[in-house]
Amino acid sequence: MSNSRIIKQIGHELGFQQVGITDVELDPHHRHYAQWIARNFHGEMTYMERNVEMRLHPPELVPNTLSVICVRLDYLPTEQRDPMDLLDHDSLAYISRYALGRDYHKMMRKRLQKFADRIGEICGDMGYRVFTDSAPVLEKALAAKAGIGWQGKHSNLLHREHGSWFFLGEIYTDLLLEVDAPLANHCGRCTSCIDICPTAAIVEPYWVDARRCISYLTIELRSAIPVEFRAAIGNRIYGCDDCQLVCPWNRFAKYSSEADFQPRHGLDNISLMECYRWSEADFMQKMEGSAIRRIGYQCWLRNIVIALGNAGHDPHILSILKQDYAQHSGFVQHHIDWAIQQQSKLT
Image (cartoon, rainbow, N blue to C red):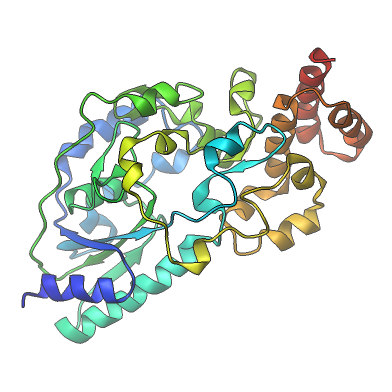
């Protein structure tokens, strides 16, 4: 049995749903990435401008890298409410499915490290480094080249039999391994993801302007959310899944059996007002071990306040926002002003 086949077997034993292997050649992606940056589609994610050579040339990041082992870990959780139903109830909070459970970074990194240790036992001493959304790695391009899936028109990776609800991880290694063939693109003429995007962030097939994307606006952006996008955010207080929810290939996605990815603290069926009522101490305690914690309490409040402004007419919301106004930072007050204005229009 070849080393590549043994490696895949080990990966499956460790709980990864798929393992693919590719080389380090990413030349076809250089122009697209350069144009994406030039069009300023990365917004305030200035780290995307840095270490570009490392991103496009894996051996620049990890010297002597010859192969990249890519893994897929499914995260689709079972939920109390259908996500589309949640979006239709403007008094409830919508949180992206990947963030309902524990933060995947530590769990994935530990599992990748165990994977690398097992590979070392079989293949002998090797140079390597593991990654999971943690360094200048062009992970979707590498995973696509390794046959994990193809990049859809929304830029997420897609698989015909498994959809797109999965995390990616990589092991850069100096082992020279047999590589996998990429999958064919099966998006066809479908434009469901483009048509559904609330803020028209998918400006054309395969081109996403992060500055318009609700996931970027509610997670990555640390400044005020532009007024032009606030109404379209609806009740989405952390991320957005719309493009994945309507993707036909996600009919075939399987629920994850990982306990870490199951919803915690009732986040799959929680009211906006309950989230708003959390103190900073509540937020830090409840979000311990969650990806949500990294946006901080002020951005958490910012997002909720916008959602409250988008909720249906409710005198209680208006009263609470006015009552609590003075206790908030100027940053949050700026968004409360907008929310009060929106609620006042409904009276």
